[in-house]
Length: 115
Image 1 (cartoon, rainbow, N blue to C red):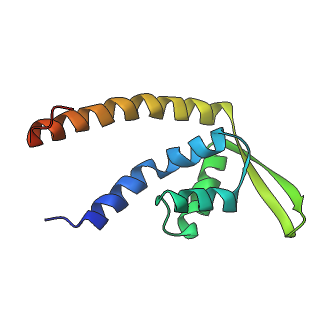
Image 2 (image 1 turned 135 degrees about the horizontal axis):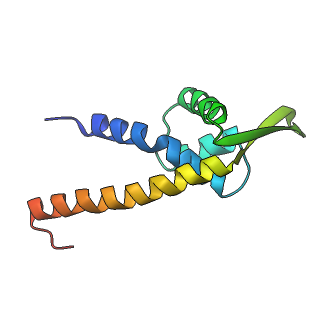
């Protein structure tokens, strides 16, 4: 039997990019704020996975960045969703809803749940 931790890790890996896009889609965000939001939802176990992901999203043209002075030390990099990022997020949302419904239907039929 597969441990639930392994299942959770695999699911997180598959959706983390789109959760980050969704968070940034709500408005410009600083990297640490993104990390804290993901930690709070149990979707990020290490900041070491977030910053390479943010760099990849930037290289792929899904986010733009800007630097701002901070009253609490060094300048901060803020992330904003681009049109490409919005398109990716919209496409994921469609696929996710269909995928989620399909998986739920199968699991519910296997357990006799009629939800």
